[in-house]
Amino acid sequence: MAEIAIALQTALERRRALGTPGRANARVLAQGDGWSVADVVCTSGPQDTPFEEEHSHYSIAIVLAGSFQYRSATGRALMTPGSVLLGNPGRCYECGHEHAEGDRCDSEDMTAKVESVHLVTLTHPALSRKWEPYTA
Image 1 (spheres, rainbow, N blue to C red):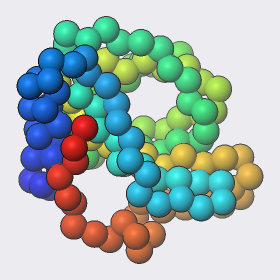
Image 2 (cartoon, rainbow, N blue to C red; image 1 turned 90 degrees about the vertical axis):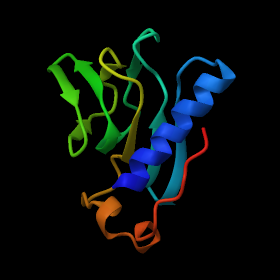
Image 3 (cartoon, one colour; image 1 turned 90 degrees about the horizontal axis):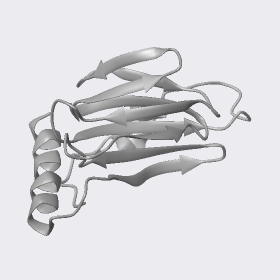
Image 4 (tube, rainbow, N blue to C red; image 1 turned 135 degrees about the horizontal axis):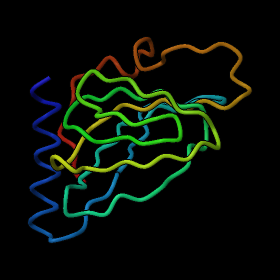
């Protein structure tokens, strides 16, 4: 787990050095017909304004490092390592980093044509790998 947090810190240090605003960067790890899994590193912090987004697919995200606030029509939550987020297509949400900079998540997106929900993030052999540093 330490390597995951180190990769997030590296992305945050790079952002500070470049003086750029925070943003989410997704790197696709695996994909198939109707699904994809991405490693998402967000370098936003308290200085960045939260903005509303919309889930484009059914989503399952697992927070690996950092923290963020998630707000939707059904409520709000502080997402920390180990938290699981479920999203429905067409639902609006807002993420913010009121308390700290940055987070890292693995996110699986699925279309409605995927008939059986499975956690590719836990079972796909392409994801049984050593975590490498992430460059934002």
